[in-house]
Length: 333
Image (cartoon, rainbow, N blue to C red; front, side, top):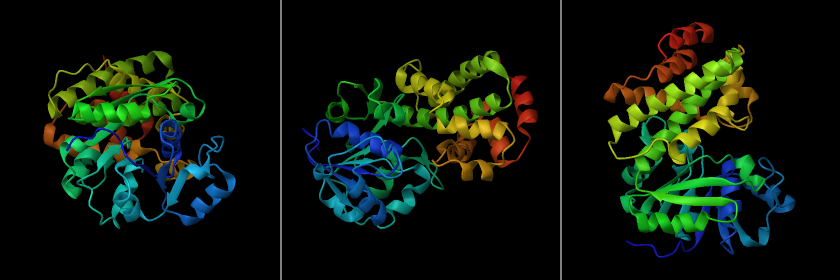
């Protein structure tokens, strides 16, 4: 099936990135559907004209939004479905979904892996919901929700095996402060978006340990090489890891104060337990879950990934950050 336009568009998710995505697509769409799980959150949104929990400075014309907590109705009545639900919760959100998605254009703006399945979100939709591969797209690239809220320039890459469909989705997102390009490397973009969260946790841990900028630079350089090794092993393709969808997203996530994964890692480096750090954060650090998923995946590929291993040992094996990072530092070049 070939999509000439996005048709009726729905955003599924209620967090900061979902709010930023809705803000972006409403530049083009006169009306959108917005799925949120909680009816009380929807009522607060309608009353306040902004998301009551995230990016509260972004105001919406609610007359142009059809809010719904019925995921089946949302899927049935829309043509393009943009999923922006944190990866740890995607299965629970979709548990009630019975509507057929085979005729839909499914766009994942989720930068994570489906836990327990150890699948990228695009592959999960393909296998679990029989969405044709050419009708699944992903969004990657450096794009913090907080900067989108401020209309700061950002660059998004739409990945899809069907480049015509990728362009349709890219046109939906392009505006004066969002530049878009397309790629057929959907798997590479998705895996890199998971790994950059893991590496951002590593950067945060090192920041918390006060290891300084020199070591951070070495960590970033090695993270790029580690990412490239994994992507080549999983999906050999003539990609340029220096492109913004890979390196750009990696850099902004490892260095930015908006990066929740870096903040989470900093707390771990400062001595917080995983549970305490999670409780103090108001948003999900998807890299915590991504670390475990990537560790499981790499048992199949056996790629040399010392940074991933170090983060896993700190988060899941409870090894001291200072001890583990010292071991890691001896293996970096």
